[in-house]
Length: 211
Image 1 (cartoon, helix red, strand yellow):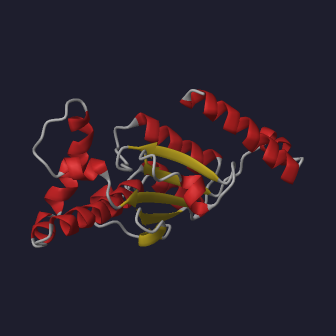
Image 2 (cartoon, helix red, strand yellow):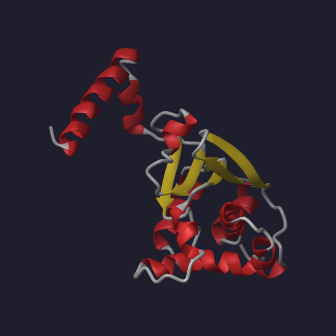
């Protein structure tokens, strides 16, 4: 059996198991989705959001990219964010990175990797903002881990800088923003950062006053 054929077979088994447990499971999903959480995570295959949080289809609205970035010129991410915040009215937005992230490791080198250089430059900028702290660590693994953490925190700040989030904070006092990091070695998620609705940004120049 080919790999893709097994995916189709396993899908049928999964669907049947859901029906066996709850005959109305798929009917409830057909007409409406009301997730309370938007998850912005890494595309790494070892970090599947639903599985590591033990949530069902419909529980989390998910966007994934290399190194869980919130880039202000990324129309894909911004479209997901706007839909989740303004239409679905999610209560929380989670940016979840993970230790051992290949994107962050690559961004810490001077190796040219082609097209992805343009994407990884966003992580290089995070390194530049915090290079004194990172370079003070004498262990390479510790430096990578710290940049992974700082990258998550910066992406939470990037969320707060968007007019989408700021307008929602003004209109409905939500959503809360969270920065988490997942450890591959033990499967545990560690909270790093939280921003409550309306919390001041690190610099007022990012705050819009005419929303």
